Image (cartoon, rainbow, N blue to C red):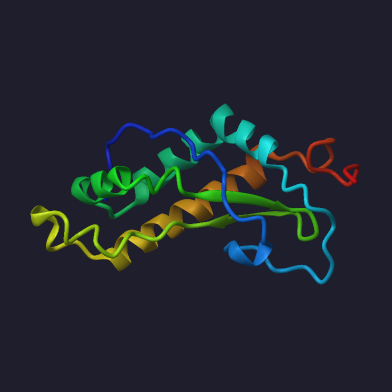
Length: 149
């Protein structure tokens, strides 16, 4: 299935600073610093990573137009958060949860499955993480290489 929608704005990256709060990031034995590289990740998202990943996800997602509208209405795309884990050299992500009252507030969404929406959001987070890691982050550059202290 494919979703033909306009790409929403990238998330503003304003979440937790604790690594354990992110999917796809293992808590390191030692902290290597508190700088989470949010500015660089936000620049990459604004510079095309979000659009690239979202477009890929939209071609593969099973979300319906109604479910997509619900996700937009509750600001769930902006609620995503991404984190650079220098120890593991990967991008972790935190997927927002659909509010429990979201479907109840809409008479036309009684057949919507919250679990399916959250699974699709998880898929988007993973795709964004992969796009950032493979296409945007240059580990030998100063932004994400071993030169950071």
